[in-house]
Amino acid sequence: MEALLAVLKAGSPYLPIDPELPAGRISRMLEGADPVCVLADRETAAVLPAGVGPEPLLLDGTELVRELAVRPAGPLADAERSAPLDPRHLAYLIYTSGSTGLPKGVGVPHTGIVNRLLWMQDRYRLGPDDRVLQKTPFGFDVSVWEFFWPLLTGASLVMARPGGHRDPAYLAEEIAASGVTTVHFVPSMLDAFLREPAAARCAGVLRRVVCSGEALAAATQDRALSLLGAPVHNLYGPTEAAVDVTHWDCLPGQDPVPIGRPVWNTRVYVLDAALRPVAPGVAGELYLAGRQLARGYLGRPGLTAERFTADPHGEPGARMYRTGDLVRWTAGGSPRPEAGGGALEYLGRTDDQVKIRGLRIELGEIESVLSQLPGVAQARVVVRQEPGREGQLVGYLVPDGASGTPPQADALRTAVAAVLPGYMVPSAFVMLAELPLGINGKLDRRALPAPELPAREDGRAPRTATEQLLCSVFAEVLGLPEVAPEQSFFELGGHSLSAALLLPKVRAALGAELTLRTVFAAPTPAALAAVLADRQGASAGLEPVLALRAGDALPPLFCLPRAPA
Image (tube, rainbow, N blue to C red; front, side, top):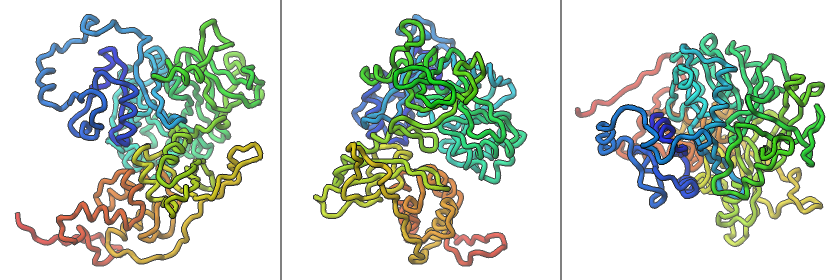
């Protein structure tokens, strides 16, 4: 937090880099942004790729601590900056998924994000007794308002522990214990949070729940309003327009849940292919204009010109952003909200960009990575939505035939996870002799077969207490009666969000800290147990816990052998 404030006060934009990202992605971000300074501590500096970007300035380094101690404590003056502060300067640079295989750096100026923050305060009115939970990883733009809205208004900022955003039980405990009044959820995570029994303790504590990132299901909306007893606000917006551009105050029983009306100084257009406004109730593509537009994509003038175009409905020189989202004004409402109070409904996408559990994904970026792997001739990735299940990424591959045997799913997941964030790793892979094509030569998505779930065979019994506990945790997270030691979490229907929910349960059961990348590399209870056993190499092959009798109703008894002091 201190580093973010220091960068902004110095007059520079900040670029957040999650140390959990694969090294290759971090390299591409640093190469594209070409920063003048990299801030890190000793732990995070160790994961930075060598030879890319300037040498990191260690925030916990003795030299920097000593130098800062002798600096004056007052605010910076313009004479100490390379240029005077200007609201048109960039405030931050955030990378999003790119369809060409390269992430896109979106530069947002102070004018845009300040408009967004001032509107939010006017609408929702934080006070000195409010507490906002900062839980979104700072590589995603929701974190911007979580960080700075409370600090601008005199409210308190509560920082969640690293990785805590994945753990519903921890979040419920933190909200209740810290008196958090304001929290943000991606709708799919809100759904997981509401299924956590401890979430009921947050009723009477929370004063507002903000949702954004994906479509909010009416059932989730109603459950949140009923269980939490706090208003739920549904917001919409892309990174290219300073986080959010429309808002809606949720009402019980409303289905579908609208994305609402524009925020301050923002124009929203629902246009046809000829850029003409469509009538209420008619679907069209959503275009955005106004103060919150990003400057564009760093170092990508062609892509910037393609997505940020001239606004034929605005003043001369005005721009508008093509979102690629299909929407419509509510039937009977007005396409001019100020005239009649119409609301926007989200209908879907016009291209291959998708959102899985609130995370923006360009399918082409995953396909690009898969196509470069050994043994793969062609690759396509789609989102499959089966009845009663959350959407999952499925990769369809045509082997090149040179290696003799097709690539294995676990090896593919590990290879993709080494290059892309965990939420972009397909849950399942299907090998095809050829990709099905329609009469127009395009991929026939309806002809793609559903991935086959493995047979629910009993398999061998768990051989160790760790395997037994992991089998139980897998089954609990996946909603299955049981899981065998050799069954893959992802082949049984798991995905990145359910894998994230798996981590805190493993920590609670075994006291072991795992990462998503570990689960991708070792997706079965047996493989994970082997990883944990390797960490206990000094124990002469003995497990830390050996179950003598399990399943009794009495409190557990732990027997500890004596050891030298």
